[in-house]
Length: 357
Image (cartoon, rainbow, N blue to C red; front, side, top):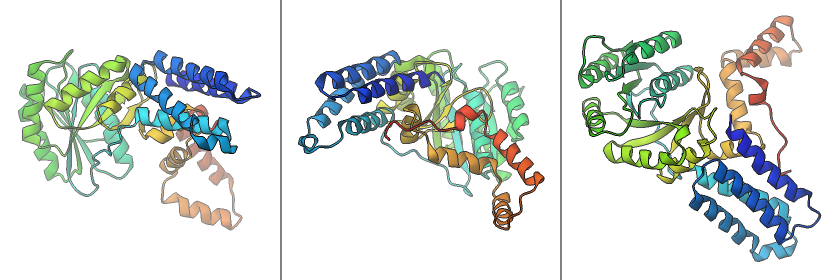
C-alpha cells in the first residue's frame, strides 16, 4: 500500500525527535514540519494539516508539561489523535441488520471500481453468515452485466440482470422483488456510472432509488482523485441520500490520504477500503486501527478478526479441547498451517514495534 510510505515518513519524523537528547522547540518544530510535508505530499488538505499542527502546539503549551510529563509520548499521542480526527467523519455509519431484508444501492462514477466493490461487499457479508444477492442495474456501460455475472459466479452469489432490457429502473425493481421472495437478507443494487457528473446520471439514480427504496446508499470512489473526493462526495450526497462511502484502489495511489481526509470532511463515514483486485482485499475501515497501523503500532483488533475469519467457529472449541488434553497431531498442525495461509502475506498481518513504547 502506497500509504505505508506516508506512515513510514511520519514514524521516522517521530523517531528522529525521540533520538534527540533534549526535546526543545527546535526539535519539536522539525518533527511537526516533517509530518506536515508528508501529509501534504499525500494530498491531505492544507487546512486540515494546519489545524493539526496548531492543535498539537496547543497541547504542548499546556501547563501540565511543566510537571515533568514525558514530552515524547505526549507529542506522539497527539499526532496519533490528530490523524484520527483527519480521517474520521465523526458520524457512525448506517449498518444493515442480519435477519431483516436490506436493500443496498451502490452509486459512483464510471471507473471507480463500483461493480467489483459490489461483489466484494456481498462476499464479505456472505462470510459473516448473510444471504446476499446482486442486481445489475447498469445498462450504460457495455459489459457491466458480464462483469457482475462473472464475479458473482466466482463468489457463488445469486445475481440478476438482463441482456435485453435497457431500462435500469425496471431491472432494479424486478431484481429486488425476486430476491425478496427468495428471502435474501442483503440485496445489493449496482447502478450505472458516467465519466463525469451529469444530470442524467443523478436522475437515473433518483428513479432507481424510488423503486428499490434502499435502506442504505453507498458511494464508491476511486482514491486516486485525492482532494477532489470532497466535491464528488458532496455532489452525490445532494442528489441521493448517501449513508456511507467505500474508497477503492488504496493499494496503488499516494493520494489515498487526500481522498480519506476529503470524504471525512463531508461527514460521510467511510466503511470499507479496497486494497487490491482480489475478492478478499477489502477491509473494514475504522479510523483508530487504520492510523495505528499507519504509524507502525499494529492493529490487534484487526488481527484477531482475521484469525476468526480463517478459523471456522465450529472448529475453535474442538481445537481448544484437543490442545487442553495435550493432543497435537500432524493433522491438526496441517490444518492450522492452511488457516495461516488463508490470512494472506505475512507482511500484512504481522506487527511492527509500537512507537508509543
